Image (cartoon, rainbow, N blue to C red):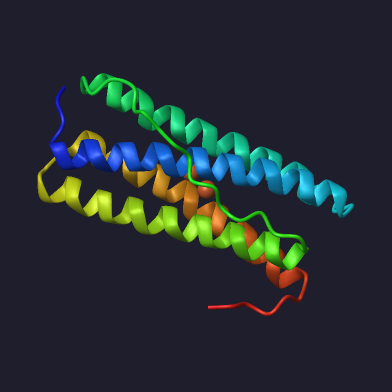
Amino acid sequence: MSGHPRIIVYLQRAVGHEFSAAQQFTLQAVQAEHLGLGSFVDELRAGAVDELRHAEAFSRRLHEIGAGSPSVQAAARPVGRTLAELLRFGLATEADAMRLYAEALRFCERVADAGNAELFARIHRDEVQHYQELERRLREHGVEMKH
Ligand SMILES: [Fe+2]
Ligand SMILES: [Fe+2]
């Protein structure tokens, strides 16, 4: 299997995004623990693991197409201090992932790369689910949505 150079770049950006998200959610779990937010702590920990699995899947694909291990510097994303901030910053991360993977998916389809289209589509679905879970929690807490 080989990859279009632009798809390799999308995969590398995806790995970077996922490690950033895993780092952010891990730090948010610690902050949520500090705030005594109970079940949200476990959700954030589970979310961090999901993002690590995504990083792994994108990295594996880079190996499969002969691009080797990406050299990744995970960008620091804001953690937040209050529950409202944790949720808003988490939503922004999920929205970024959705945008990036939707764009990557469109490009894969344009160059008829079904294998990578399937990978980006699958992970895009996970991110939509993450987004919806955070949105539900934001509504539950009566926090005003910021668009
Ligand atoms: Fe992810
Ligand atoms: Fe996510």
